[in-house]
Length: 86
Image: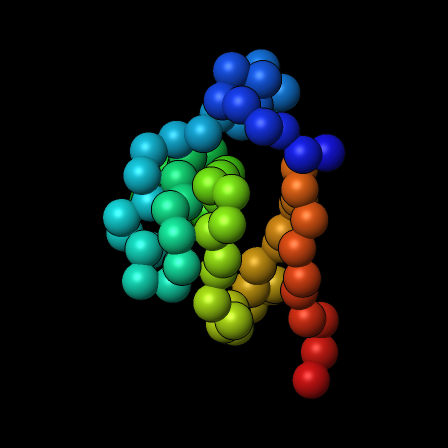
């Protein structure tokens, strides 16, 4: 699903766009927005919705975890690339 205008996006986005993602801006090319869904101090799992502006890219990176997973991605719109292993 590709959405061309903000009003349509806001109606379709159940998590909300959030605020400018300045905390993690160094890992992105372009503008992204972060909407925390859990409080990292109160919940052992940090959940957040990240919204990418058209043309925004995330630099290749890895998420390490001492226990459990590392990162779980749920794509709700658009398309992208990810790597599972290797």
